[in-house]
Image 1 (tube, rainbow, N blue to C red):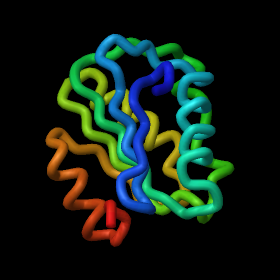
Image 2 (tube, one colour):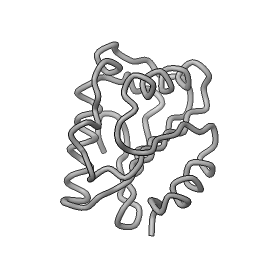
Image 3 (cartoon, helix red, strand yellow):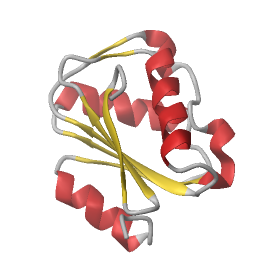
Length: 125
């Protein structure tokens, strides 16, 4: 468990982050998730799937930092499921500012994100 929520390794190549509904997203919180990813799958390229239910609050520095820049080839894809209109916009703006080197996409249904990751060969095995 991290301050953002539950982080689990599904299979060998998919990190799923179940974000707490009361989480206030901060830059240190995102970095804690990245460190947890490395503890769960050390030296293994993974995809990450953030599942966010409802609107969340956030701190501006969290949106002004490219959290995935240092991951390089170790990050195969990022999927985000958000079922709230304002936070969906926030996530899309984040990815427009930091498109990164990896495929990324925002979804409104959990199953859609898993299907997309499977299509990339990045889903749980």
